[in-house]
Length: 461
Image 1 (tube, rainbow, N blue to C red):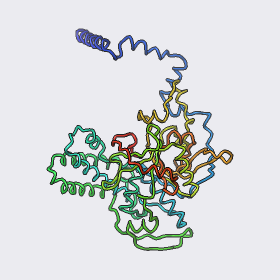
Image 2: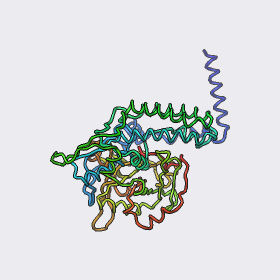
Image 3: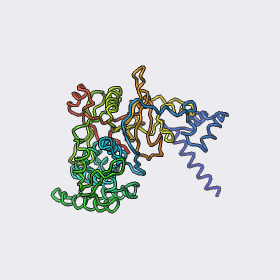
Image 4: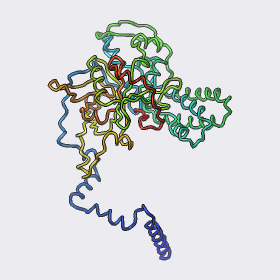
């Protein structure tokens, strides 16, 4: 036993000596010096004890900002009801459909209404499967280790997305009311279903890469048939025809007739989602006034990559205010996890004081956070309100309708201070009629193509 201990000690000693001779490693002397940063003072012990049994967020709450933010807004879009995406990454789809829902409810004075997210999500997953398989066919001459192929294999499918998915899918497949294709357990809890789909698609990718080009089209169709069957068993059969009854606020029948998903959309919404909107972003890590496009940043293979115009935050606010004042909600995305109080629904950079808790500084600005992957667009919501100071004309705060249920946040909504909006807002989709002429002129530029692994690709979930 003693011999074993001696041998182990000799090995450890040899490894330690070797590690200390390499430049850049943590030597025993360096470890001794840096370990002195913890002295065991009363302050350090108190913080250490608190962190042992409490969340960092709970300890970092800024008591000076605990008072509930004012919930008055000078301008607000008319909306009704709060949706719930549950355990799925479909915020982008809920948000896009909520923009259209608000318009339909207001136009037809409906007591309530909700589109079927499950219906469009079905086709989203089918189209994404085709996008992936066709991309694998298109890149079959590249090495498996090529960065583009590597990215595709790592990211075959997910249920996150962006407004390009909303526009392409609806214009291709239409919409249906929620009762025509209700949610299932799998549509509300997508992780298990997505794991199976990812495994199948990766399996298919290897098979397609090994096939002769002339055989891939027929084999891809057979693969998509298998994907379709799995989707139907998980979330149901998408309706091709359905009956829908429209009621007024008193419960009286206004109309009752048969629709297809396309005819339902044409009758109650009927706008060109692909041609009537622009997406703007605020990314200070890149030049403003330039147009960007991200490869494979789409949901439908035969659709278009979404194009972004990068603008200063104040120009984006101009368009947002014009839209809200005209009672038009917008697709909005941000880094929702930063300084977010989910209980109150307040997004405020002063809500948490992490610097005081850890006695350190966190000085990175928005540009630096983007460059280091510390911040990105993570969640989409529906921008519905702004509060403007009548004395100065400056914006004080904003409100978005969320898709986490009515008990989340402030009555299902989230309120953000103007300072938080500046730091963590990323994308806004605006109708062209609210876009100034000089900004429309910028969109005539040829887009700068960015790779799929660019930080701005990150899908909203």
